[in-house]
Length: 296
Image 1: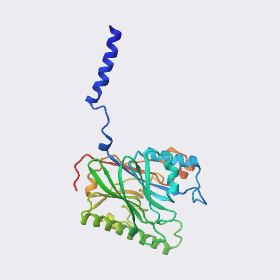
Image 2: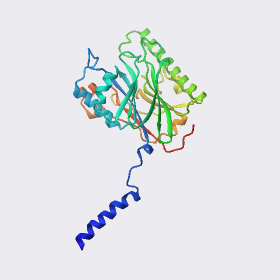
Image 3: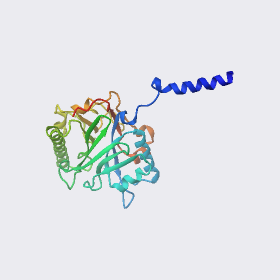
Image 4: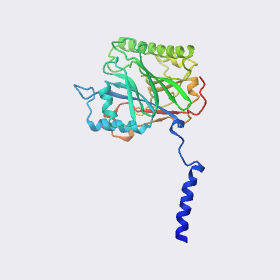
């Protein structure tokens, strides 16, 4: 009798588990996870890539993307779809869209196939000089009760290639103008009642707390948007703030899940030599509630 009684009790426990909240919520009610990842000079392996990578190194990059568990990832510095396809073969749950006007450094998005995403396409005004700058890329996303627009961007850098004062001044001027164009896009979306929930996600090559020669004033001075990444520190240079950002309209900010932000620190996970074959940037990830009623 005892032998029969124990399996009966185990069966009852299994049947009662769903009643006590042990099951996960449906996928459509789980938070929307948004990330940004500049995969430095991701080439297609044909010709001479700026950062040559082996098949194993593409696999390592795919592992980092899996580590984010993000629903959608804003991407920067992607040569073409052939380069992305070398990642997607290792990421069966994901697909991608990508611009083509940025020459060897395009922006776009990778996202889970289960996510409702509409590709809007490249936003050319972000490329102040189309021969040298990259446009943004815009998508519309819907999950649960939440729909929103995201733009992936990669603003002009001030780098070692800017070898003169004139070049450095010009790079800052371009970045200021890109900031203005990004803010103008948000204002236009809101004033034309397209949507109130808007994100700018990507590599802005600057940080909002900069005091000397700031370049993001159009965004930082606005009462309509918030840098959710303003306090985050770089994974590679820990005394500096991040230059990869997730910026939300005030409406979209209300969806932010407190303390959900995190950096996938590839420099802690791998040696410097291995990490730099993945990227010189670390992915940033945040989560947003999709259960609240839609406000627009």
